[in-house]
Length: 315
Image 1 (cartoon, helix red, strand yellow):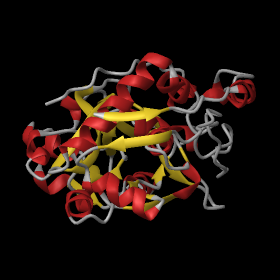
Image 2 (tube, rainbow, N blue to C red):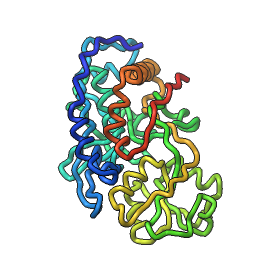
Image 3 (cartoon, helix red, strand yellow):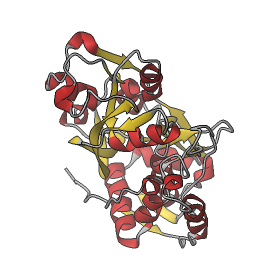
């Protein structure tokens, strides 16, 4: 169990400022309009990170008995976190090198409650296919990046959470009319990230033929393929797709028929149960004090979609 004395969570005035900027019209509050890569809703251009405005002050006197990961963090005076860099409003790095999004702020929240200043986080961009290797090898202390909890992955790593539940959906070109549901994907070219759960679901449910499935390391590569008309659809979690659609609203759309369920967890070393329990304690605490909701409302919530924090699964 984690034992700590939290410094106070200081205000969220900037959140109101961000909301005011993005809330002038319905369109301007879409993903990418703020809280991620700030995209121009008309041109789809722009690349400027903004945060929810939730200020995180590092906790003091944090102790986690029996955690090698925490001992390493304390000795280093920093935490190494695995993240994504190309997912607007989730895990994103803008042209100035600033990181933002819901996942990034969850990572910063955990760091602060472990007693580490979020400014001292060392971020490592880890492709989906390399996540288990990075965690098992100690390359990162924990991973926050649309990382779906699955029984298969539990064989290699531990998961704290879930901290968010998403649904799989389809990103299409704006003029696409033939694809109206997942059942209409037969004969269509579908793209997703290598090693991702959504890609495996396409295969398991035989939504399209194997030869029509394309895999890339990142979702942004799939989106480029879609814009170039080399594939017909990109599939992954709806939260990710809405961010891309908001970046190019004149060219892209999300189908809006989510299927399946993805429970996002924080990946940790499988053997470090004390560390996993400590992060679960943090997630339960931020559900009660409202911090999770403030972060969501200032990032993914700017899409207009509501969400509630799921209960922690202490398996």
